[in-house]
Length: 303
Image (cartoon, rainbow, N blue to C red; front, side, top):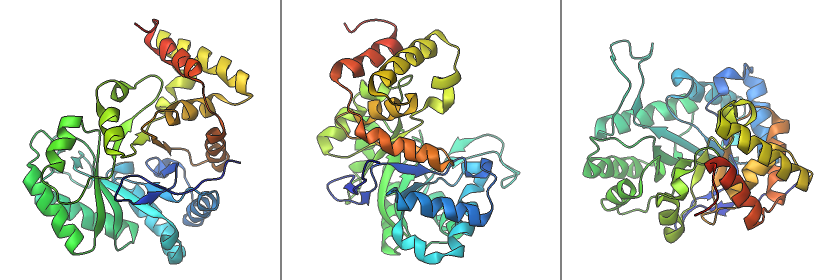
């Protein structure tokens, strides 16, 4: 199995494992608290020490489920880096008066969201807080003020963003004394606009590693019936056969081949799938293999 060594995700840190365990589907895994703890310790033992959360995951339940497991063995907290997100407000049983899903990057909401996440997770500090989605009403000065407050009180160590465009990233960075440390974006062989719209160019220039969500396209790469999904799946299988690997390993290798050095987020609660993802690090796609997948996705040759 490929050995995992922690890597700095930006010039100012923090150090993350090169693959990240995502917990957005934790509520679907139907695990007991002890099973959740055992899974957490198993992927830590494999070298995956960074965990990805958001306040809204599982209709605001997943952070609490994780916290219940962590409470069984609090010392495990010292072995992991905890990432969480805020700014999406969902229509939910937890907010019965809310009329529509929307975004909120106000000072008050950011502070309250972090306090709620810390309480649910049962931790004293987030290693990284991400703004989950770009908010058309974001006041960058107000966000900066919220982050300054959170850092001052020791509740958040680093700030990053998710799904931000380069201009949105630059706007927020212009108001911060501390550097943003990542942009968590969707990267998979079906949807990779960030490769061409300047997002990954910007991060490579800044020497900031993106976090890559939905690398497997939510399963669409395995069971999607669109012409695009079918083309890509067939090409992935051919390349997998060339390596003696699996399709999911080729997908992760395709993402990690990008020069911005993305950190893939694994969404499975099956430890064997996690091990398979780790083994993808031993695959190095040639430029031609990488572009064969690009061509299959686009449905045409390069210009």
